[in-house]
Amino acid sequence: MYEIRNYYFEPSKLDEYREWASALAVPYIRERVDLVGFWIVDDEPPQIEGTPTDELGTATVTWIIKWDDMDARAAGMKNVFASDEWSIIGAKNPGREYYHRIEVKFAEAV
Image 1 (cartoon, rainbow, N blue to C red):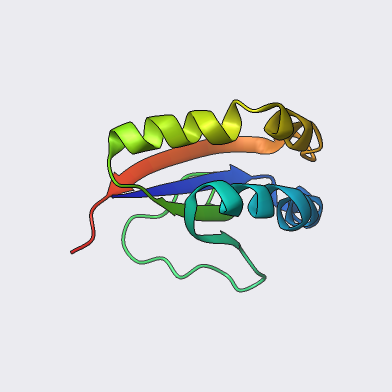
Image 2 (image 1 turned 45 degrees about the vertical axis):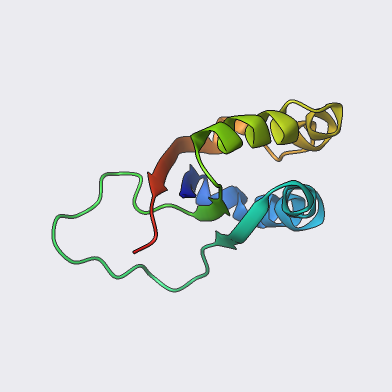
């Protein structure tokens, strides 16, 4: 099972977010779960077909975690994000107020 996390983080603050994620968040998360990848958009415009996006546009940050099942996810998320160490890392995030939307969905490989 894969957890796909899309964040609509304020584009004008992405450089600060990238520094925080690269230096603190991603290494911490990668040590504790099966992090498939963590991506931040670049300057290339998105290619959209069909119905246009809403006013937020497309996600600016995407990361994927592989889990065995939802029980493993519950335990893993608690282990990662309920720790004192994450509290310190999270406090250095360049701004919770810049998350315009957080979208989490689950998928199976085919």
